[in-house]
Image (cartoon, rainbow, N blue to C red; front, side):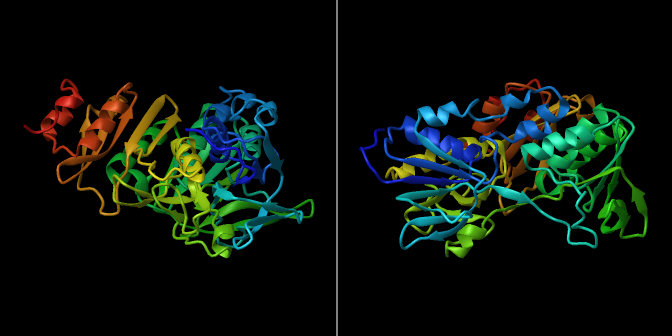
Length: 420
């Protein structure tokens, strides 16, 4: 693919993994016109998975999280990098974006890679300054410093972030309590059958996991003139003391900029399979994009690393005028908790699943799980079983009706589980 010489500005809002990869893809695909990348954080664009995994655990160095290891890449590739700046308005008619310092940047094509932000708890004391949230490199470094052996950490929310932080904390001998409003961890993602396996995992590592509990409020105390949350009060009146409190109740897409500009927004910025919005000159990628998926026949929004890594290639091509390249990769994510390594590929559509089939014994710590509907596999997960993701992906894409007994049998190759 080659791009014609042009003075038209490619403007990217969101100096994230998606934003940085979009700038890279534009240059690799031959775009030789101006590119500007704007980000609210002051750090160079970085990847987020290490924040709650290797970096938090002390197994990965800080300089390894950046998309490009130094700022020289942006200079060498003539990508204008504006860090510590927030976009405040899009003027679609005049093709300009206003920043918080009053600067106005022109664009020919605009990519919104504004990501998502942690959801806040709307309860009394929920705005206390010492409540921690987990999204940024700064959040990860602060949390790591707080993981002091013998200290008490209360985590509100048993999603991926909450559980990964809990695992890192327990490995440092921190006393951990996890509070979850639903009946199982990860219930909306994995369902009760597999969520129960993660509950067992954390309880086996002495996490005080409390399910089906609601947070009523925080008890505030004046500390050096600043009101700080020192206790968590549950809906049943129970109060829990904590040295540190982390709120990890999910994330919401950063759609305010798009919504104010009149773009279509519904659980993210609505885009087609080429990642183009209702405005032909504006695109979206990463956490904020609710993109039509050709395989599933419905829009999906995925808050995972693989999406932010791979969508920008399609977005960049679309910005350069390519119309036939569609984003149709199956969602993929992974997690590391204690001695558990897990990969998941696929997606449960809005119609849901009918059954979960286990391959191997979950109690052994090495197993797979498959979500089925109509006899076909919708999604698959491998736990401490490696080099099978491509086989799972092929099985999903085949739409094949499977023989459940063969699917359950680890001795049968995944390529041979379809009914005759």
